[in-house]
Image 1 (cartoon, rainbow, N blue to C red):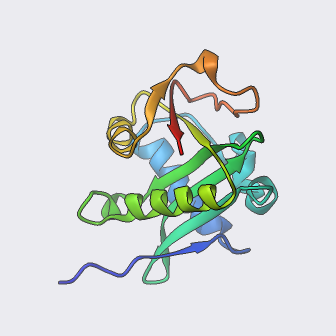
Image 2: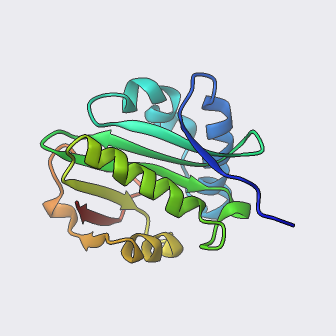
Amino acid sequence: MPSPTITLRPYLAGDGPAIENLILPIQRDEFGLQIRLEDQPDLTDIEGFYSKGAGGFWVAVSEDKIVGTIALLDITNNQAALRKMFVSKEYRGSDKGVAKKLLTHLISAARRHNVWEIYLGTTADFIAAHRFYEKNGFSQYSKTDLPARFPIMAVDSRFYRLTL
């Protein structure tokens, strides 16, 4: 059976519930993070939070279902934060290519907006994510050296930077 077609598109009004239904179970059930929707104000106002400057929020869609997300938050000074990169368990892996497609799209958007550096924070538990980011050019980065406007989440304990 051929792999389903994956399309990327910007966030649309009305996507919120599907995005929450993708992200929250990954955070809570797969990784045991004690995080609620209320702890993530960006998820309750995606457009208001991400549509400034170089920012954006994109979804990967398969058969009319959101199976992945990625966001770019403009933190000024030609710098941005990669946020909310999540892929449904069934769509993970290099053979599926969803994560790579999302990241490639985000990097292209960042370059179009003259972003020179992309930072991200993640938890120590997301081992596969660490490998993915490192394989795609991100280097581990010190929390103390992050730009002042980088939004550190309570669950973030490992940080990365990509220079474009």
